Structures are given as structure tokens and as C-alpha cells.
Length: 300
Image 1 (cartoon, rainbow, N blue to C red):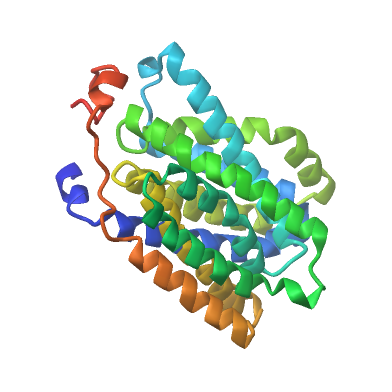
Image 2: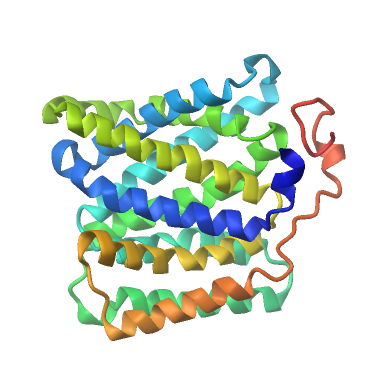
């Protein structure tokens, strides 16, 4: 099974994950109307964490003391990345929220790149992001943009710590450990909204279905992709995600893009496609940084 997964190009796993994430975000709008953005995020983390624990059954004995900070940080940024983003989606169009949020991983991609030419694709993607947001109209909800920027900061850290945790634990065991932590961290903001909303059974079922898409399937695909890609390649490939956000906003939420936004979509898709070249991740040197255990794929 693992050998078969290794034959799948890592960029294809990342693209599938991005598409699923935006589908789940668009579907979450219905749940947001019932229990608010924080409540929706919390339900997704709770159901997602439970599903992952049941499916993956991670080995808790494999956790070492030095693994705990990375797991806690990944859980923290994952929970609030979702919470802040859904708060943004409540106020601004999905495609715009994704475009603004993308500035987080875009910054990580630029910092991680060691060659000047590696900045070409993030710069091109940034131009596309500007066209997608159309800031010159002056009608942007600043609170919504602020939430999207906070989500972007969490997104950038999420990519870094997903790769670190993915290096330490086999498969998606690290994700199965981190998502319950995300649910715990967001309980203080999510649970009050759920209780206030007093959701019907269909709302909980919809939230559980969305959780199966994100975080279970999509975040799992991202973790597998990040194990085989550099920060720069993955971060730049994420430039396609605003296009998926606009597309899902159109198909599911009837949020039609303007002509300039379509041009922006073309720019970010081109930048993301160009980033696929040389996206295989080198594992040289990991043996010196990570313990040699069966749970450590880099040393196995």
C-alpha cells in the first residue's frame, strides 16, 4: 500500500486535498448559519478527531516528550486556522477569503526558498491574488479580511508543522493525534456557539459529513504530500487554492467571479502548475534529526 502511494505524484495529492477543502468550506456555510463559524469549526474538529482515532488507531506509546510541542502546535494552528477562516467566509466571498488567506503559506514559500528564482512563482501568484481580491473597489469587509489574514498565519504554520509531524509518525498517525488537540483548543470558542445554536440532528450529521472530507481525507492527503515535497514547492502549489475557492463559491454558493478575477485565477493556476517541477522532497539529513523507530518513515 505504501509503495503504491509513493508512485502517485505528490502534487496530485496536494491538488486533491485543496479541492476537497474548498468543497467542505462551501458546504460549511449552511452549518455556519445554524451554529456560527467557531461552532462549525469545533464540530468539524470533534467529528474529524473521533473519525481519525477510530480509523487510524494511532500508537500513543510511540509519542516521545520531544514530539509533544510539535503535536500541540499543529493542533493549535489547525483548530484556529479553521475557526478564523470560517469567520472570514461568514463575511466575505469564499474565493476572496482563500486568496487573502493564501498570503500565509505564500510567505512561508518565499522564506523557505533558497534561490532568487524560486520567488518568481510566489510573486506571480501574488499578482493573481491581488486580481482575485480586487482591493481597488473599496468595498472589502475589513473584519472579514482580518480573519482571513489570521487564518493565513495559521495556515503557514500548519504547513510547517504538518511536515514536521508527518516526518515523525507513519501514515497519517500524526494527524490523528493533532486533530483531537485542535478540538480541545477550540472548545472555549466553539462550544458556546453550538450550545447557543441548539442545532438540529441534520446540522450535526452535515457537520460530521463535512468533517469526513475535511479534516479527515483532505488533511490526510496534505500530510502525505508534504512528506514528499519542499516547503517552497508545496507553498507555491497552494496558489491554485484561491481558484478552487472561487470555483466552489460559484458552483455551490452562486458567488460569480468578475472578469479580472478570472484573469487572477489563470495567473495562480499557472504559478501553481509551474511549481510542480522539482517538487520531490529530499530526505537527506533526516536520519540525523529524527529517532530510528518503526514510526519514523524517514529512517525506515
